[in-house]
Amino acid sequence: MTALVCTALGAVLLPAAAQAADPPLRDLAAAKGVYIGNAVAGGKLSGNTQYAALAGGQFNSLTPENAMKWGSVEPTRGSFNWAEADQIVAFAQAHNQQVRGHTLVWHSQNPSWLTNGGFGATELRGILQQHIATEVGRYQGKIYAWDVLNELFNEDGTYRSSPWYGTLGAGFVADSLTWAHQADPAAKLYINDYNVEGLGTKSDALYNLVRSLKAQGAPIDGVGFQAHFVLGQVPSTLQANLQRFADLGVDVAVTELDVRMQTPSTQAKLAQQATDYGTVVKACLAVTRCRGITGWDVSDADSWVPSVFSGYGAATLYDENYQPKPAVRTVATALGGTPGGGTASPSPSATATPSPTATPTPTATSTPPPGGAGCSAAYTVPNQWNTGFSGSVTVSCPAGASLSNWHLDWNFTAGQQLTQAWSAVCTQTGTHVSCANAAWNGAVGPGGSVTLGFNGTWSGSNPPPVVTLS
Ligand code: 9MR
Picture 1 (cartoon, rainbow, N blue to C red):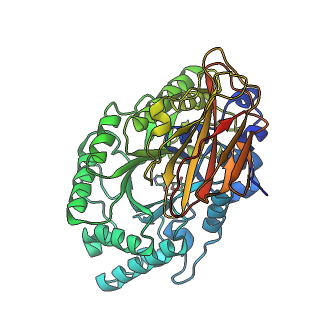
Picture 2: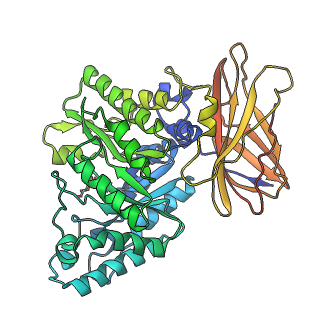
């Protein structure tokens, strides 16, 4: 019998009383078929327990804030430093999180040997190819998506000047995608930019580029919308803009969300910020190919904003003491949590939403538990790849029924093996899987629900089991 880890880290360590009733944001997002992520720094993951509890407990996707940039990994030509990037990938794996790799080709944060090298086209092209092959190859199979290209355009929609564009011409874009695809054919390859979130000139330039890359057959899988917003200025065309890119046949994602305000914050500003965060999450959920939302920096104590925008700050979900701000509630509510905490009953479409990488499997629903409370469990696998899969089981009670704790049993009849579970304590013996609630999520109120998540392996077929709730 293998005991699997319950990762209720955030719920255990978070000090705010209000948090105790809330499922982690990651569980709510998973039940909606999207991910929720944040940008992280390795030193804080190992050196700050409050930061690590939030990063590991609330989010199911991490983006290295700086650790995978060229200047970080190859400060001297031919001499690599992977320590922080490796650390973040290991943390993500230990917490059952996916990783967005950021970023391979950018005009900024490049080492001086590269920017001042005076390389000709042939040598520069070789350097770029080598860099992409080396970095993507190192993390092959461990990165869900790469921001292959970052911030290609000026505000007027012309190409930004960079060593790449200046020396290689626009062909470096398709070449970079091709080299990344060769190094990790399974990774989703993105172009990422800011001030492209709403309809406009810069967004049009990106749109035309993506359309032309698709027409050429270049391996472009997604477009990242950074979403560094100013309070009250989420573009009204955000959803329409995400949708038009999705209609080109690519995934879309919000990759660096923050909402800055003039400091100090006030209750009114925090309320507007909460509205803004909720608007962004709702826009993503309304677009089928929007795969997830990543915030840029875990707390206001970590944010890049004050050092760049004088007089501005308070841009993230958590305050300088790592306490949730009102925006956490609107994000949770937009993801299906109830306004007062806990989770609302997911709509049928919520549990069936296709996820980023997979062909969804059918959902199996149990019969009501003994005792006839009317509560039920719904098993779904929205995310499946060659030999792995991840899924969730949502325990729901109708109005008038409730549970004080819950237990789930099922049989994996096709040899599937559970490898990890969170928001529950699960064991597998032979084909039989048994899961009990975690210490913090046993209670399911009338009209409420809780969701556990898991990863597993499969081969041949992966039929959904019948889950028994007791
Ligand atoms: O948050 C990052 C900050 O710590 C770095 O100093 C900065 C260096 O350029 O990059 C910041 O992250 C940026 C991201 O990589 C790309 N989009 C804009 C982000 C905020 O500047």
